[in-house]
Amino acid sequence: MPFMSGKRAFLELLRQEGVEYIFGNPGTTELPLMDGLVTEPGLAYVLGLQEAGVVAMADGYAEASGKLAVVNVHVAPGLGNALGMLYDAQKAGAPLLVTAGQHDQSFNFTEPILWADLPPIARPFVKWSAEVRRLQDLPRAVHRAAKTALAPPTGPVFLSLPADVLNAEGDVDLGAPTRVAPRLRGDRAAVEAAAALLAAAERPLIMAGDAVAQGDAHAELVRVAELLGAPVYAEGIANTASFPASHPLFRGTFVRQAPVVRQLLAQTDVLFSVGADLL
Image (cartoon, rainbow, N blue to C red; front, side, top):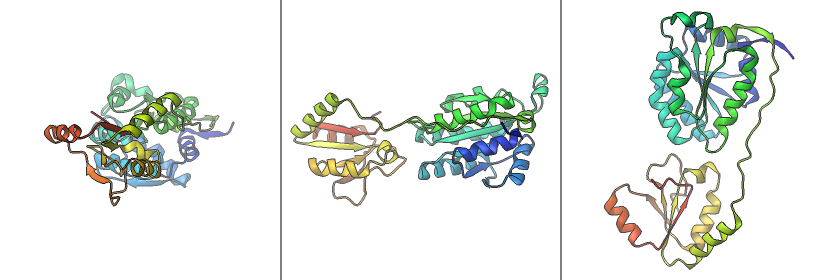
């Protein structure tokens, strides 16, 4: 096991996970990380002037690239400022690892300025939320966070990083990344039953959702739509382009107005939702 500091281990773990950019608005509790970026180059730090903008940048990058993006904010106020855009990232399914610096743990019992118990604050908006309290736990925490963020359905995760953990030195087993295999074949009988319904439909309609783009299934959906001759609508609040806008079968976005929806569905005998949110 290599002997290293927590800040160096954290950056090396991010590199293992394929991270290229950290989007942040740092403060004093992030000084170990800033120092590590100077001595351990290889990751680009994109500075933002307010946490909402920082999360928005990371969200856009993660959705466009499909890669894990890392966010770095400053203790409780920084995390609080980030929550609005973190909610958006959650709804968009953006794979983000949001980190917040935390005070040295020896201070926490006195509840120092800007201190709060951070994981419960983030928990409603993320798939997993935790605080790393020992250097030895840092690799497991980072790998679990990355795996969770990137596992379908993708979404943000949160780690609180106390300054003493990042400054600590010791023998660290960095481990290795793991992933959940997302490519699963559906139940054959259910697929055949759905195919029979669609083949018999006279007025089918397809609603395409974000999962089409996230699963890189544009070509397959185009073939199905052309085979059926079915009009295709994008789901009401879309974060991606789920169907080619120039295709003659594309009808635009599904309007979120009850009278329009009722009229459209009244003309349809089979609604085929592909990776869309029907709520």
